Amino acid sequence: MAASKTRIDWALFLLRLAVGGMAVMQGFSVLRGAHGAITMAHASTWGLALGELVCGVLILLGIWVSLAGGILAAVLGWPLVHGWMHGAGLLSNLSALFRLLVGLACALGGGGKWALDR
Image (cartoon, rainbow, N blue to C red; front, side, top):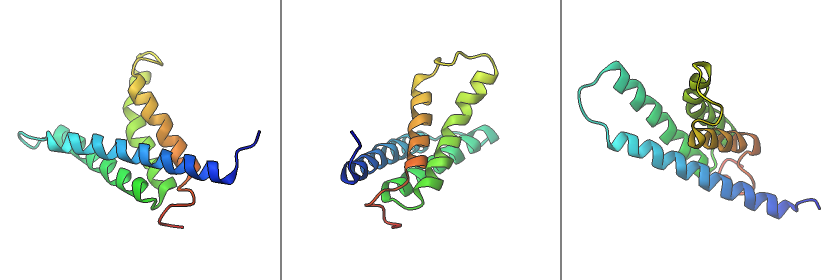
């Protein structure tokens, strides 16, 4: 049975809310806990968290969803892929794998009918 256009629009809307909300909350929690001396490691962590926060807001609003989802998947997926390259198991970090997959789904699905950039 093929899904109707309305069901697909609702699915894309709910996916956008989930992925964007998750990215905003994750980025905000990292930035809120930022303290200490500014080192290169801290600056890169804060930069990635800020990128995650901005991409999450764009996805929530439905602006440039495919681009923001692709960037989000790259930002969230790089630590996972880096771990795989250095011997971590494929399923060693399930939360990062889940975030990578939903970011990719958001990038592929786009904003849907109720995106602001339509």
